Length: 427
Ligand SMILES: [Zn+2]
Image (cartoon, rainbow, N blue to C red):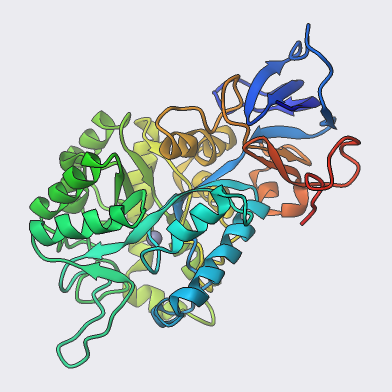
């Protein structure tokens, strides 16, 4: 197996230890050694990368990935493309994400059932560039719930699968799994974009949630829930769900339940969506529309709930519904600064949400998201110090190298004399 040595970098390994200057040795697709004596007693590496003056850190995980959302300005933009056209959009977004340092995507939902699946498989086969992907299913909702676009006079097919009752839920989950999805997405609560089913209500029943979790777990797949309501989030924790998205509203019982479940559950607060609606919504969404939807109040609730959950040691992920016109795919690293601004994380804590916690969500084995011997070699060499300013990660020109699975996706010219032409590919 070929070896790559990165020398003299400031290494932030995301384990909780302070950053240190040292070397990191990669063999094949895994990290072999890290530290000042990483090369002691070993043969010279096949390839050497000079990390002087740069920070080496784990690759980022988008924890609420909608890879198939190609900067849509409306629901219609997600419905209209044919599966063929939409697959190309999804592949383009996957490329954009890895260019920006996202080496993993934890799938929330796909706009059509097999978009994440097809792109995941093409990436894994080496046919197209992209992150590791846990493929999301379509949203699964209930009649009248978030995402049910149909009306009696207009049976419109949206981007969600509509089920009613545990048996229909079982069938929908099994179908998504048969077609290759890794992550099942439930719309348990309502949403401010659906006036008939607002954020605080819980249209999906506990029996439906429990059926989805039991069915997915029987296949070894995960279930993540869109849940803004207190009752909906409690359903998911009680049913044994794996991930929660949003979770703005909470009472003390829910906070206790989440703390107790913190070793098995991850949460993406997804503040990026609302932040972008308020600050970058024009011309698509006016401030008046945000106010009418109650977005400021939801942000206030989010700050209160997730600041409390941070103190309780919950594993937060970054990821805020990127892939919409006002919140474009590729700007996802903005969520790291938002974890600081809204929830009180320090830089290392926010970066851990984007790396270590994301790695744990991707793979239960815990061999992703930290730079330790034995871990998969997904990492970024950053021109600068993200611990001093996390926003430098939003600029792909500051990413001197993006490596996934031991292979260099892109590297700045002149960093290594030994890269092969394929490894030297610069975006
Ligand atoms: Zn979402």
